[in-house]
Image (tube, rainbow, N blue to C red):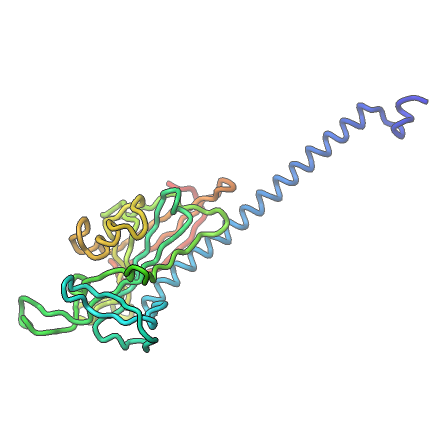
Length: 280
C-alpha cells in the first residue's frame, strides 16, 4: 500500500500543506472578527462618551444635581465658602444659603486616570455683601462666579463627584483648547446668573461654559484642582469663556481614534460633536 493510498489519495506533504493553509485562514478570520468587534465596541464607547458629556451639560441647564437632597448646605463663617453636611432628605431648593452652580468636567491623560472622566457638582453662595457700589454692605443675590465663592462638592466623607469609567478599553489621549488657556483639561458648565447682562446676552440659554487653567496631568480631587475650582491659586482670574474644547480618545485594542469637540459661542451654551478621525 502506497503513502498516497494511506491518506485517501493524498500524500503526507499535501495533507500538511492543506492543514497549514487551513490554520492560516482560521487565524486570519479570527483576527478579522476580533478587529471588527474591537472597532464596534470603540464606536459604541465613543457614542456613550458623547452622550454623557451632553447629559452633564443638560443637567446644569435643567438645574439638576444628583445627591443634593441628602445634605444641607451652609456657608462657613471662616472661609466664606459653602460646606455640605449630612441631613434628613430635603426638597430641591430648600437650602437657603447655597445654590447649585453647575458642574466642572475634568479629563486626565495620566495612565491611572485616562480611562475616566470626572464631573464635580459645584456649589456657591446664594447671596453676598458687596464692599463697593450702590449696594455696598447690603446682602444681595450673587451676580458672578467670583461672588458665589464656587467650590466642588467634596467634603471629606461627603463626595458627590461622578467618576465615569470609559468602556471597552478606550483612553483619553490628548486635550486641547483652541483659545487660552490652550492646555485646559477642566471646564465648567454653569447656570447663568440673574443679571441684566446675562439675561440679555444669553437669550434662551441658561448655560455658561468656561475653561480653567488646569492641564491634563493634574490628579482628580487633588488640592491643586480643588483650589483652582475655588478660584484660588493658580486660578485667581476669571475662567476664560469656552470656544472649542477638543478631546481625543484612542482604543487600546486597535488603532482607532476619535475626537469629541465641545463647543460654545463665547461661553454661552454647549454642544458636543463626535468624529472618528486621527488625533492631531
